[in-house]
Amino acid sequence: MNSVNFKTAKNYTSTFVRAFIFAFFFLVQVKVHAQIVEAGDNKDAITAPQTSSKIVMPTQNVIVKPAEATVKQKDTEILRAIRKAVQPVEPTNQIVILNTERGFVPDKVHVKKGEAYKVHVVNINMREKNTSFIMDSFTQSHNTVFATEKTFNIEPQVEGVYSYQCPETGMQGQLVVVSEEAPVKKRKLASE
Image (cartoon, rainbow, N blue to C red; front, top):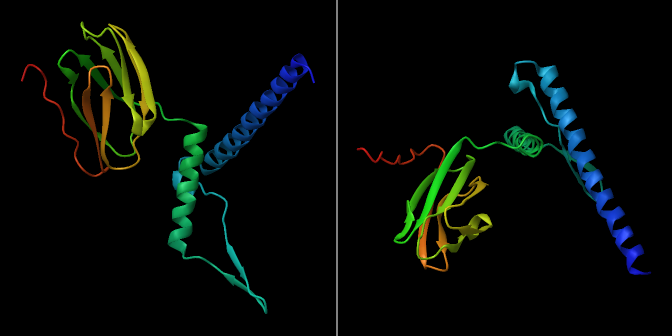
């Protein structure tokens, strides 16, 4: 097979895969939307497909129903995952991190688990005008050129302390993820 035919076959394959994924998410969205319309304003009435477990023994068939609490939990998790896939959350929380000659400002950021955040990174370091910003735990790695802004979204799901860093300058900062119930430390205004 020559290279032109190979490229053509590769393009058709990738187009088919994209079309399949689009069709799948479109159908899921239609199904979720139909359930929402049927439920009206009662959001609790939306249910995911019911599941049941069958355990087959060599001598007889036995049907075992899982506990109601776990089925409802799983259904809620499935529905939440479908909604998130169909309608991604646009972050309303915003974080600005400055890369300066003396390090990151702020060098410690507190966020809540499960909330979406839009992070803006700006390099204002006069000595190092072309640096990197790396947040490995969230698979974020960006080139930050002097006086330009890099923006990306994160949605922390696990509590803990994560680092962000600039390898060229050796500076580090911390992203502290707290539970949804815990109060987040608010930064004071510069005027205070």
